Length: 174
Image 1 (cartoon, rainbow, N blue to C red):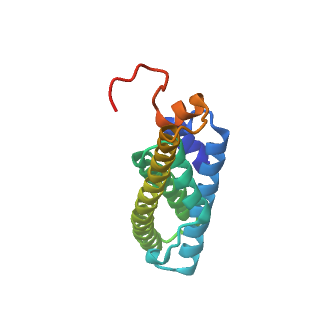
Image 2 (tube, helix red, strand yellow; image 1 turned 45 degrees about the vertical axis):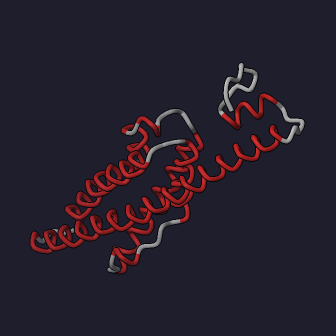
Image 3 (cartoon, helix red, strand yellow; image 1 turned 135 degrees about the vertical axis):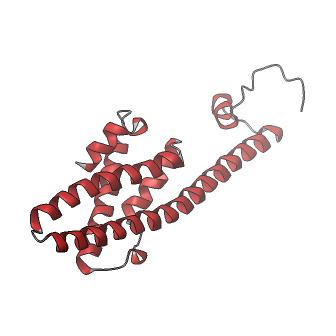
């Protein structure tokens, strides 16, 4: 349900990319499983570990050119959706109003702390992956330029793509 909610409300996730949808689902499942496990154990949110599927989700978003803002929005919308489902479940199961209030307060505080904690880690992971990707793309461009300058035989179409520059153009500067 949460995956459907995210795909329906975030345009970048609803582009018909089945792999992205599956990566979103896996990340959602990893986070929800961890949240439920931590709530069950009464663990503090600062004990969270980024689920492997959530880390892979970040890498997939970077590879697709999907912004950090979209990543953070998935967590905010996911938090809101989860809270609605969670609080409804609490109301169905906890009859005593005082106990219900305590359960809502504690779980709300936990969820906000979880989202805050994981967001910080994911922002760092996004930046690291983005930097790695930029460095590797820069390295490929530099190697391609060196090969051209060295007179190596190179496929012009491949070189055009790597450099983001049409080599058959009339060159006026170096």
